[in-house]
Length: 313
Image: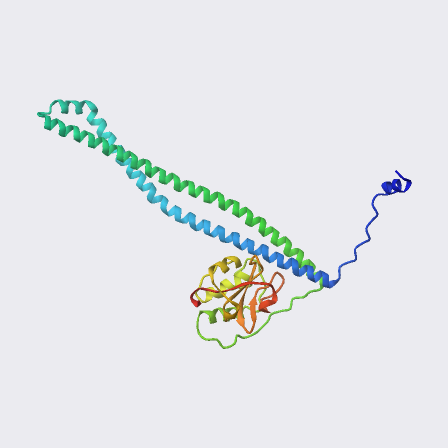
């Protein structure tokens, strides 16, 4: 090893020059990126809530089936018990005596047929009881599976909630450091609209302008993106799930040229944001944490697709 190489080995790698402090614009860009990423996490949370809701609905349906199944099993059990008691009282000896006392071959054949029929009846009753018990067991196992799944989902929801709250605190600190202040409420009136469900939904989102983005909320104090569109269309009598991706699956997909007020605009490849088209190339939406419900151009972010809810199709 040369002397120079030995010195380098002793001194270790040269220190990299200190990175310059980020500019305010760079910090704002980071804030915007982090806020968009947070919205994706919020929509994951909303998706988990939908899964929990669906699981609970399924559990209720199964519970509604359990009581009748148990009643059927009890009835079958009583039937088998009654038949078993009757067979015990009669005893096999009585059957033999009855056969010996038969007065003719025809009478003997009739009694044998009767005994065979009674045996078949008992067999069928026992099979019915076994089937009823299997139905009850299967229903209980389904309930146990659903309960275990809900426990797992509940833990995921709690972890996601903590992640969101931690990220919100970090973003709020960044806004404070950047001196970003709350712009305050935005006031505007909707243009004249024809009567109908779409107009009701549009008037609803106009009435929410300036309210804060609140993650996981569907109002009335504030909303997240899918909570706003779900609440708007609920006011028009049409139910939409509280999740952007699920809403995309619930609407009729249309082209941009077909957009009319009340239609929904979905953003990003993984559909983590949604807003409502209100005409004039604009949407009203709940943008992200730390911001208020506002107008934006349709193309303010990459568009995934367009949709028209329910009865307005």
